[in-house]
Image (cartoon, rainbow, N blue to C red):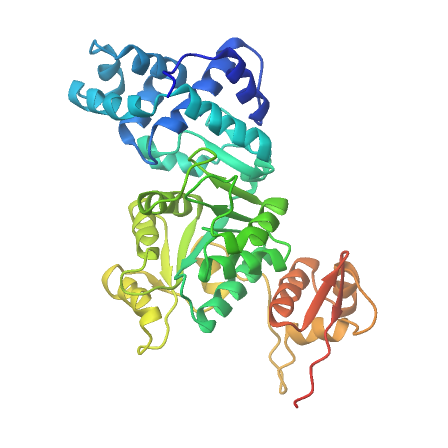
Length: 402
């Protein structure tokens, strides 16, 4: 390993990764130091957060390099000398130039961008985490989309989800997306993946917060899904490129999901599911928390029932009820008639099974708002009843029973 030294060429590499490089040596120094800090600390390190918050990333890093022998830095950050010494002892083990250079090289090769709290596109909701907020975000996709993550709902749940759970997660996400609400989740199998796919099907904005470096898709089976998320939304992590996910990083990643969501909805979760950790972070942040009920005989819903019974999570069964968590009512009105002709039927009727029709054309034919049409088209796509190509949509004919 190579002992760390301030590297001006590496600092300029970081500037090329920044979404808003800005002029001046001070800005360059803060960017580089922030990137270095992300290589030194584990997510949620409150001592590092307090030190960087008080001194700035560059000055705080110089204190670490120098060993911070005096008590001035500790006093400025509101830390005890023992807390600061313990922090420095764990950070300096990773203070290696080649490790930093490797992370920056991986980011440059993969087209990953660096976003810091100094940037205008930094999500303000993360500041609610205080000293445990991330020092930066490594982003795959256009970082400016981070400014559109409000309003947002976090949808989380079990990896080993049932068809019931995945159906509801996708349906909720599609309907929320149609109402202009971003969907936040963790990119995992099961409920997370269903939520992301539902949002994408409705042309909505979705963000995946991951526990490892964004340069390498995890899980590998979601490589294509994460690529699709990055193409229209963002995939983000607070750990640098080349980092591997670990149990601790998954648990700490959950606080970012909870912070970015104006409310958190647990769709399906076992008694000891990691989704309950996300729910705990949401509760600690004072964010609304909700859970979806399931069969009382299903272990996959035991965690949801536990949240409602022990942690006063609200029971939600529809997208309208989810919207109410963030003060948003329904944007659609169902017309009740004798034969119940609903909006889904209107959209299906406006589609052709032969020709492709764009959203505005379907909206004109159905007499509905384009935003509501997008929601129903996304749901129809998830059900396999409609398909999209080049901005156009058409109805998929039902298969005859064999």
